Structure formats: structure tokens, C-alpha cells
Image (cartoon, rainbow, N blue to C red; front, side, top):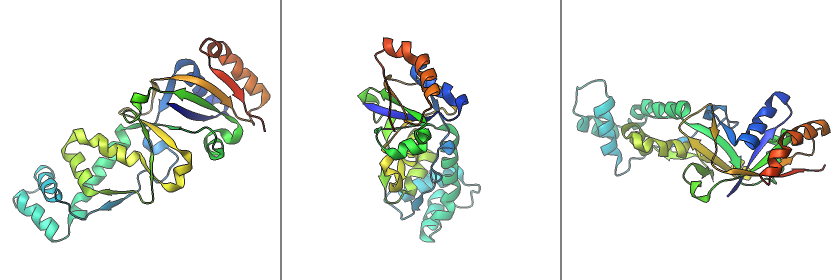
Length: 245
């Protein structure tokens, strides 16, 4: 599958980021908080009890409560009966979100290279570059994931209780948070690499097949960067192109 990474070339000090993608197959895996969507961790929660909520809440009370005044079954029953689930679950939800913020790494791509907004937002308003990367199809849905666009970013409280209780399920909740965006971002057709390390350079599975410079890349910058990758691109059959105004 072909995916695309846009890089801004306006700052010469960041040219090395582009070069390491093409020449070394290395890409930066960032903290979710560093991404450009200020609503990355904004969502609403559905607190309507499901068939499993009482069971999960009972286990959560047994594990996380600070007093043994009542048995977990009684405590959880009273929480639901008195509509206190939101208050009791709040610190558990905060803990899950914090772990997602501090442990998960993200790299954003697109499955399109033709959207003008991508060039504006991530390709230096034309003074940038788009790198085409081919990844194995079997990695899609495994380490590379399509972002889902929805009218409202909403999750059920059960998923957060499960994440706190069963670490093996935590990654699924993290992915749901980070792979769900509102429809105002839909035109980006985003694909995300989701890993368990952040703020690190990672060797990606796949290969570069095309490098397209934006129409506003200065001639001297285009010639300099093209010269730096020309030999490698020739050897590895990577096409180099430059868009015209």
C-alpha cells in the first residue's frame, strides 16, 4: 500500500528529517501531544450502564478503592443506583489517558498526495516535499491504521474500565482514542503508525518509491537536496519530481 509523508522544507535545519526518511528509511515517532489536532484527547463519554458495567465497576472498586467500608459488590451497586458512575470513574479515565499520552508513539501519513490542504498544512505551503512510501499490506490494521472520521468522538466508559483492569486491552483503547477524529479532518485521509515508543527515530517497514518537491521549493534548495539523494534514488529506482506552479 502507498502512503505519503509531507515535510516542510522552509527551515533548513529540518532538511535532515527529510533526508533520513529517503536515505535511511527512518522516521520520527512522536508523542500524541505534539500533533496538530488540539482536540486529540477531547471526547465525550457514554456513562449509560451496559450489561458489563456492574461487573467491571465491581472489579475496579476492589482494586482501586481506598477504603474497605463496604464489599465491592455493594459499593458498585450503590454507585450505579445513585448515578455516581461519572465521579467514581473520573480518576480511572484520567489515568488511562495519561498513560496513552506518555507511552504511545504516533507517526502520521496520508493515503493521498493530491490534496492541496496537505501541502498547505504539512508541506510548507508548497515549500516542502511529499515522500511516497510503500508498506506491506499485512501491516495495515496491525501497526499502520486508517483514521476513522466521525460526527462525534464518543466512547463508552466500559472501555476505560477494561483498560485499567486488563493491561492487554489498554492498547485497543489507546488506538480508539488516537485513531478516531472528527469529520473536519476527513479530507486528510490519514493513516497512522501506532507504536509503544515515543520521541524516537524508528526504522519503518517499507520502501520509498517517489519524492515530489513542492512548487515553491527554491531552485537552489531543490538542486541541493536532489543532489544529495540522486545516487541513492537512481540505485533504488526512486522517482524524483517537482511540481510546477
